[in-house]
Image 1 (tube, each protein chain N blue to C red):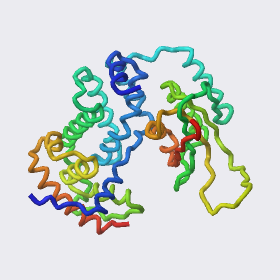
Image 2 (image 1 turned 30 degrees about the vertical axis):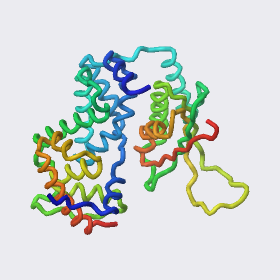
Image 3 (image 1 turned 180 degrees about the vertical axis):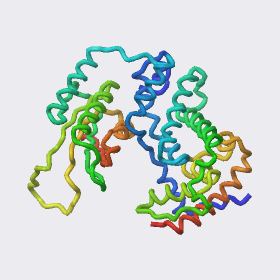
Image 4 (image 1 turned 60 degrees about the vertical axis):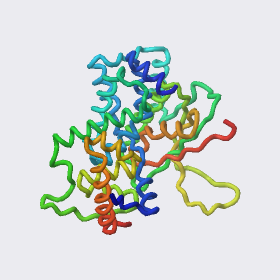
Length: 175
Length: 170
């Protein structure tokens, strides 16, 4: 049988198409609801951590998406730099802040240390000039993760991607 | 926490463990479903059905393959059943049978568009073999066809892909 083999550039092209895609917002909660209805999952018991996280979310929204670390991670840490994508970021700022806070709370509930801040457009650059024309980041999250792959898995669920934004992941030195 | 520990906790109906498992594996499985069924609500429904079946039958998972492989097999079963229920939805061609004209801004978008323009049989075998890395034996088992059919189908699918690629190449 002639397999009609791929040319190297075709192999590369198709291999690059193997990209993970974050499921749409709300899909996870709908699924969890369906599993609860079938008795396959138990509703999460409220806990002190849950209340702290909920309180943190309220503060986040009121203080324009501000989040501070609840624990100091001892292992590797990664920064997720949030940039605008090629298209304008979708949705209202209030919706985004609420959703980002929910996301951070969900991530924290899985034992990941997470903190973050929204950045304004006010910035100054000092020192040597650079030829880089990359836009300023809109915000960042600092997360704990065992390695880059795990950090990417967390970043893939970040709602910023669903709003058409771009996320750059960098490991923090010395962590 | 590794999959094995999470799976045990999900069997015990632990919601947080399920959410961790979902976050870890859904982007890869959803990506596959999007490439097979199109990036729309169908892929989301298929992902939901995949997880519902997986959790329902989790006690049957023996660890003979990785959990990702097992979950992908369930996703393919769901996709095959969806194909049988929605035969008209499987092709993205125009009603008169001619493929829609293609335009693409970049290479990834071009690959997606070319895949969408192929027949379902060609799209499946290219996605599974050339993108996801399945063997012909694995494809045969997943799609309920003979390995030889998978090979000959792949050969035709690659020719169709090349022909369409030349029309859309960015």
